Image 1 (tube, rainbow, N blue to C red):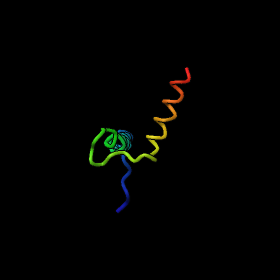
Image 2: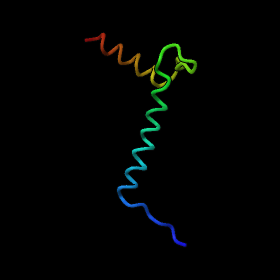
Image 3: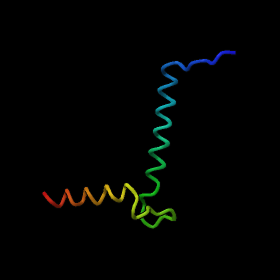
Image 4: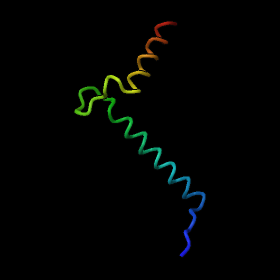
Length: 58
């Protein structure tokens, strides 16, 4: 039996749902005091530090 290809709409939905899950996983560690607190050397922390420096430089 051959492999069936997804229609364009279904491919788009698959990609969108995968990206949504990825976004939600990244967004869960932002709250202060959560048990899975964000690590100090994580990329989000580094980005926030760079943005804070850039904002204070104006």
